[in-house]
Amino acid sequence: MSFISKSKVFAYLLALISVIGFVLFVIFRQTGQFNLEVILPYRKMLFSSFFNTIIVSMITLFSSLIVGFIFYLLSISKIKYFNAIVEIFTEIVYGTPLLVLVVVTAFLIGPAFGSYNRNFLGILSLILYMAPYMKNVFKSAIASIDEEQYLVIEVFGFTKYQKYRYIIFPQILRVLMPPLMNNLSLVIKGSALLNVLSYNELFYTTAVIQSRTYAFVEGYIVMWMLYLIITIPLSNLAKFIERKWATI
Image 1 (cartoon, rainbow, N blue to C red):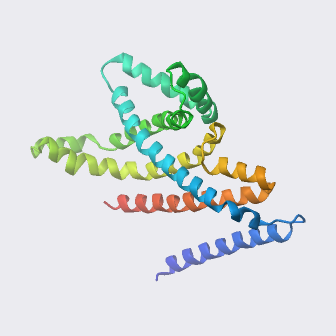
Image 2 (image 1 turned 30 degrees about the horizontal axis):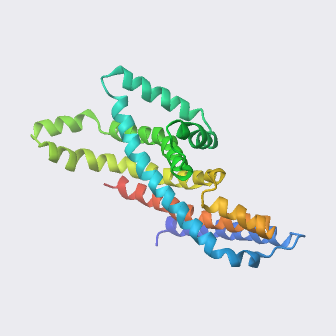
Image 3 (image 1 turned 180 degrees about the horizontal axis):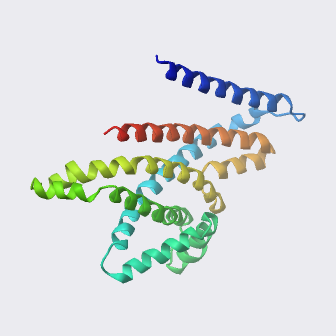
């Protein structure tokens, strides 16, 4: 192991010890009584909402990926109307808090189209919110392919399949994957706002447990730990993918 690697490991170990020390300091300085055992009878509810959060997040991620790509195609279309629609929608989403979009979609837009399925409308609001961000991810990924790449394609007479298989897709994926994983973390945290629709995700289930046990602080601690169980591995996976694709 090189000196640089040893120093990096030591730095992370020291940082981890510092964080653990801070947590222990906060715990032992508390004057109130905390009892996490009151949450245990509701562990099935928590695990159910835990997996619901993951499922909703995955559905939102891949659906917004598709919608975002459609938005990207519309944004580069020669039809100016499509460009304008995407631009206006993007500005509206950027200026709208996610909670407001969830409420407006579920209680105004959905009923206007005869839909009262709150769960579906809540997920739809997450998809619509993430779509412009995904559009920008595609825009950056495709812009990373310079003109010389296309010249090489023409010089060597690649077929359309070869062009996308060996030149375009690998380079797009290299740029696309890290922000895609980061967006998944954003979606997971954003899914907590579906609690206003009484959707059985982590935040809503925690609120139900808190109302039954009055263990408000304990509930938030458990919810915090469960979110970290999801987001920390995803964050490290995003970093690994970024390093992996950077070497290709």
